Length: 394
Ligand SMILES: Nc1ncnc2c1ncn2[C@@H]1O[C@H](COP(=O)(O)OP(=O)(O)O)[C@@H](O)[C@H]1O
Ligand SMILES: [Mg+2]
Image (cartoon, rainbow, N blue to C red; front, side, top):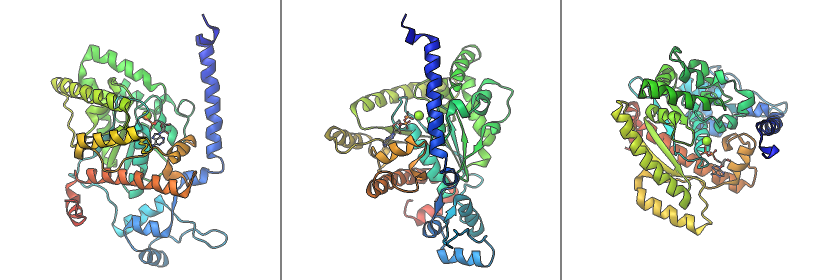
């Protein structure tokens, strides 16, 4: 046997890799921690986000309805945090929250393949919705913990197995999922993190289902119900395989977003994903666990328009899927790559890593995709009807 392939050697490799991640994380946080803790927005952007004029905000600051804004030593305003923006929304009554009767949006970002952009889409969507003022819970259901990492954690160093979905899925006695919901440095955005140990839940659940029946696939849905009142949107980032966790995610979801890079390989595997999805839906239905989706969309991800083959596939996908495809697609971008190398999203960067042009373009399509999804969510809320009509959406 090759000595480099023994369990001991691989354990050693794992540990040394964790060390590297540890120092990578320290590097991305030190000195930037402040900024990481609170992304800031200019007064112009703040006014747009709050839905009131800058003058109205200044007036409220002057007469004490809002706290005076912090200034630098040179007396310059340092911008507003999301928490401050949310206070303004509260004061002006412009919070976009759902009301009683509007269903909690539970969105699965799913495709049974890895590397298609599920975690990237999930994290950017969650942060976009938080910026808009929604109460969001992002649930990392993948033991690889990519989404958890995008929040600055090294999953296998920073996250205890008790802090993940695992205890709730393992034990029928646990009454609420609230123990796992943690604050993030984004006001209004909460995270249930994952780590490698969640992988065990996959097997345990399979074994218990073999003995006790498919009802156990309902466990995640039950858990979400215990925390749902606190949120407008729950985003589920599942593992890239059709296992018990993915099935639980499908069962819990009421909306589905399928990221698909426009390559032949990804198109092929997404086609089989649809085939598996149909079988899954039928099997769950037979077990009295129907999947009820209020909407479903595909989104092209990691698209490279320089490549003629990808352009052709995009055209094919558009004609094949029609309105099922989001109008905006996410291009392959050095900004996304660079942000994730810093364990961050593009929304957290305080400026371009590459060029202003690349950064702006990237922001435009990220916002475009996320805004389309926001609208789809609002369309499920009766309370939004009038507003959507005013916007010409309905
Ligand atoms: N639009 C994009 N442009 C550049 N890199 C991307 C883009 N989307 C994803 N990536 C990178 O591709 C890798 C896989 O993406 P990820 O979101 O983790 O996929 P999944 O969750 O489907 O496995 C990550 O390193 C991520 O940073
Ligand atoms: Mg992922």
